[in-house]
Length: 248
Image (cartoon, rainbow, N blue to C red):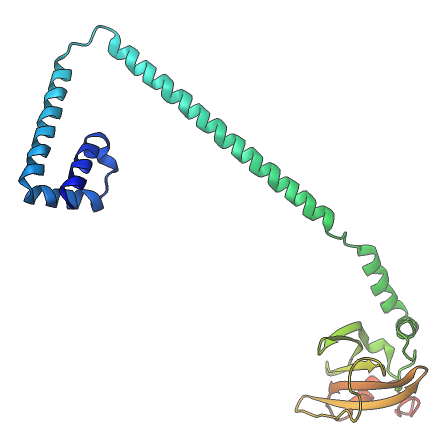
């Protein structure tokens, strides 16, 4: 720190000593320890301030003045405090209002949950699985009958699944005994997939089988993904009284 800065901070320290941080006071004290001229100015300033302070302390205070001064200061502080409280209250009210408006806007732009349609759709699936599924398939320009006689009493899901970025109709059946499943994916000829020579794949837990049928609008490819098991797809199909597969 040079003498010019030291003189500046010496005068600031007289007014706002508490606001000068250590990054200022430490270099200032180091400069005063090595600069006789600035040190003399600092001593002179200190002596003057102490003399003024003593003189002010020796001035007699008129009777009642101290109480009036204290009351005046308390009143000013009370007014400032009340203004601050009012400001905070106004800010809080404005914030709550904005939150309320925002919530109202978001609420008004969000769709209302149609619970009735969900109940109706799932009720229809439970009560009349085969007929409702046939109507559902026909509505998507697909053959209304599956190429194998699946037991619709085992149907647990009917809808769409995203496959490689495209929505594909799918039916899911559950096994009667072992908790296995069979998912039937239905690909129309214009589904956007290359359906030539779709491979059949097996793993230790599941197997994929392919069946292509002629539909009213072109070939339809059925992909059966099911748990292996000794009976394969047969455990999900309707059975005749003699145990043979219906329609086989």
